[in-house]
Length: 210
Ligand code: GAR
Image (cartoon, rainbow, N blue to C red; front, side, top):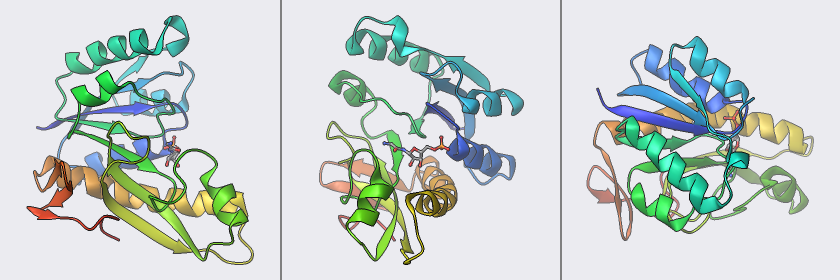
């Protein structure tokens, strides 16, 4: 089976969606380890409960970003993954780390990229009065939240929406699209190329599939 390592920092609801997909044979591979930079991340519990190796690797125990990423590379490589999945991993990655896994690392981001890279995406989208919002799965490159987009889910923003309701709606969409994108990758249908992401050999539009 194709091997997946998932990196988290928090609740791990996206991790749970991936675990559930695996349980129903809809992931196309096996999650062999979950690693968190926060030792008390709830997602570690989810992994443990699913019988998946759960590793806490606290960044605070390292002197520099480079030292931490070096240690992280070691732990990841021990599991010989085909794919690294960032699921709410709230760390900026060093170029060395990104280069090591280029083309086989995906991230999910709570906005319709390239809009709202970075943090507090729901609050910023609301403040701008956008009519639609959503989430994006993309390949990770050295440009923060700037790698080629693979798949997006879009939703309408209503007058009643708050940052909290948007967060909930976006999360629900994330749980739908992340397992699909991971399955595409593990089936060999998805590729990273210098010009962008490819699906079944075809270059995806700049904003991925919606
Ligand atoms: C998700 O909404 C994900 O898009 C976001 O963190 C949340 C993690 O939730 N990621 C980022 O903001 C990355 N910059 P989860 O722990 O419940 O999966």
